Structures are given as structure tokens and as C-alpha cells.
Length: 459
Image (cartoon, rainbow, N blue to C red; front, side):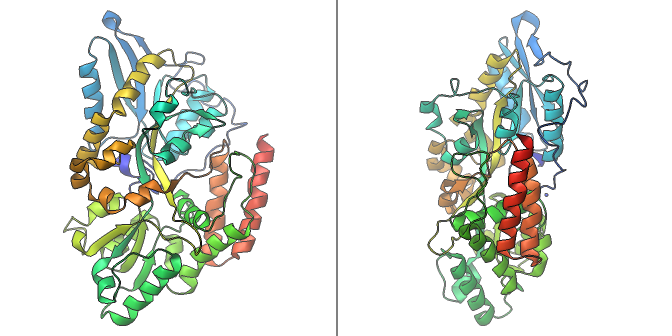
């Protein structure tokens, strides 16, 4: 199901972060936001036209909605339900975009640089708002999506849509980094509760490896390769130790060079140095880590919510759901558990002539009824708080009931117009730290210089 590949589903990004859905799909180098020129101005849209569709036959207001491939059929079903309910008034035309999130983003931005393109409504990654809002490509939704409505949504997804005090998107479905564990093995070693700290995780791994016959060869697997999904992983360690990349409330003040950030990356590196995780984890994406866990080769695994469902597949998994526990990620000593935020939002083309019609689709798709249907049909995690108390959803998507605290402790990646360039540097430097090519202190010092230079060159 391509729209769940995020770095999504596995998210491949996964994760995320990520490709579709937040999980770790390998993504292309992003073009710089500034100075990319008007290459591709003729692609798909006519410069200055802004939006595609307009009035259709009989006064029907048509608009174009973009998203990745929908092999599950759940998205097309959503579009069909909307068109049926609003027949004679509105019509949504679903335009399929590349499955690779980076390619999708590049195509969207190229069209905007060419004058707006013909897409009215964008289904986009949680890391896009600031990058598309800063140059004025997407509309400020603060008035259409007022505070009293935002309060009904999970805090993390709302934060991801906020840039310089304004809201540029409406949360559609979400994702969060979670810790999977082999409860059967841990119980044999005397542990009935998940680890609250990274040190406790190490303790539990050592106990299982010492006390349980034929224990898995890996203690802990996660995503450490040089790609977006590993950025999410690295930031989870940094955040859990109290570090930050950007100053609170700022989109361009870099503060990553701190003892807290270095401590977080030191914890990540220690997983390899102390033999808790294999050195090969520096090349792992969601695919490699999930395979290790599903084949019974790991005691713990950091991944996205979709992984739990894979344990029900007897052909692809050597373990069963009964052997698996899910919880929030551990924290550094004295810190707090933080899960990297994945997921997808709705953004309106600022130049579209069909904004009112397109926003009716946003209201429809993010309503409790439709979010519930998507959760039941495709296990997409809702963004409305009330749905996390819906028993039918809890029964159909067990991971929601198993680790609700992980979904409540999400934190977005740095919200900045320059995030794409920053992400490339973080992916490279986090990987250098994980492989031992440089110390955590050298890593954060290097990133302080590189990220500051990105900001200064763009201003």
C-alpha cells in the first residue's frame, strides 16, 4: 500500500519518516527552496493560472486533489463517497503523484515555481508546511480552521502545521515512533513492564541474552541508515535527552550544539558500542529492522505502528501478536519519552480559484465519520482525539490501545523553510556518529555550523 510506505510504511521512507504515511522511504535530494528558478514552468499547469477545475457542467465546482498511489483502494473510496454526497455541487478529481515522497515534493514545488500548477488541494507530508508556506505557495488556514476546531485534534499534528504563528494545514492521519518488544522472552528473564529509559532497555537486553536459551542475536534494531527515517530516530534520542535543533518558537535559530543533544546521540551510539544493536544498524531502514524483528532475530525494535499488523501474517512473520508488546520509546535519564511524528496533512494551493470547494473535501475527509472509516479500512491512525476512545477502532487497530502514550508524546521534526537541506545534513552526520566516524560532540558541533550556514545562505 504505497500511501502507507513512509517512512513511511516502513515509513521503504517511515519513516518516514519518511515516505507516505511517515516511514522511511529513500528520498531524492531536495532542491533548495530559494534559487531553484523556474525550471519546469510549463509542467502540467500554465504559469499564473493557479488551480485546475473551476466550474463544471451544471455549475458543479470541480477541484483537483493530489496524493500518492492508492493501491489499498481506501482513498479512492473516500473520494467516491465525497463525490456521491456532494453530487451536483462539488466534484473531487484525484490526481496520483509519485510514491516517493521526495519526488512528489519536487514535482509540487516545481509546479508552484511555474505559477501554481493545476492542483487545488495537496495531501502532503508533515514536514512540508514551512517549506511551502514561506514562499507563499500554500494558503493560511487560520481563519478556515479556527482554534476551537484545532482543539479537537492531536497536539503534535497541529504543531507540525503551524509556521510563524499561522496554521497552514489540517491533520489527516498520523504516525508515531514506537518500541516493539518480545514479551515472551522478557517475561522469561523476569520483566513484565517495558523499559522506561534507554539504560533499562540495555539491562533487559543483557538479561534476556544471558538467561534465555537461544535468545535472538540482536538486542535492539532501529533505523540508522543515511536517510530521512534515521533523522527521525536521531531526533528521538536528542529530544528525549532535552536537546533541540532549533530554538523554541524559531524556524532559523540553530541550537543543536548543546550537551543535551550530544548526550542523546551518545546514547544512540552506545547501542552499537555496547553490543545492544548490531553495527549493521547503521545501514538499516524500516525494511531491515522490521525483517529482523519479524524473523525472531531481535528482542526490541523501534518502528512505526504498521509493524504490529505484520505479526499477524504467518507467511511473513516467525512471531505472533501474542509474543509482541508495544509501548512508548524510552527516555534518557531525567528526560521524557518522545516519539517522532509522521503522517499526512491537507494543504490548499494559495493561488487556487477553487479553495472553497477543496476545503469542503478537507472538512469531509477529516470528519470523525470518515477518519473512522479509514482507520477501519486501512488502519490509518486518526488525528481526532475522540476516536482514540472509540472501541470499534481500538478493536480493529490494536496498536492504538497498546501504546496510546506514544501517540500523545509525538514531536515534529524542525519546522523550517529550510528543512529539506537541514535533513540531508542531519542524515549524514547522524550516520557518521552511529558508525563511530566522529564523536557525538563533533557531530553536534558540525551540524551547528552546517545548519547555520543553510539558514544564512537562504536569507
